[in-house]
Length: 318
Image (cartoon, rainbow, N blue to C red):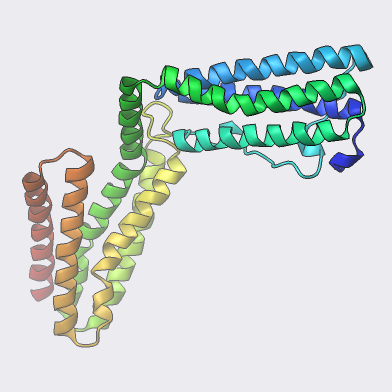
């Protein structure tokens, strides 16, 4: 890698050309990744990519006049001091707010680059173009605001908010809720069966930890292998698997930890209280994100939990 201060004017222009080309492609990648769920925002990035193309043409025209037809391939990663950006294809599925933040950072970086390059140039025409590009990048922020106002109408914003909520539910809430329900409910039977069978807190704790961790691993793999998200829009399978597995483990550990209390009766009472809280949280999530009526959610979750709880006690007491 070379320092920026070591670059010649020819190399600075070549770097600017490749940077504008890369930014334009990133904006088009943003637009392509957002088009299905956020068409209005996708249109914004398509138009911003068009502006980057215009900047690139200005730079190429000046480069041809000054240095001829051959443009050396110099990229940002060849020069010290530039931020290395994660490729868009590794960011799938795209998060709308993260994309908008990255676009703001890109415009700021471009403005700073041209400002710094202009101060190093001794050629009047090159310095003028670089100065014009500083102004253009500054104006680009206002252009983005204008495009946002033109494209993100109230109905478009409402549609995008609905899409964002749907993506949140599909990619995080659903796998997390499935894991939490499985961990909280399915581990009740082995934990309380062990507790009543042995009458000892430590044995119940060991059984609960084994059941919770085992269920977390099982549910995590099941969720990750269920589909790759390409058709359902449920996002990266690895991320879903991690969310589901972690929530499954936490759901079981919640009512297992009280059995660290040496006194068995105290541990049992605390564990029961934790179970009530867990079932309440599950009911609230079902009401908040899954559009299940609150009373219906509470009855469904409570009834299922009560059945598993009673099963554990009956088996442990037999």
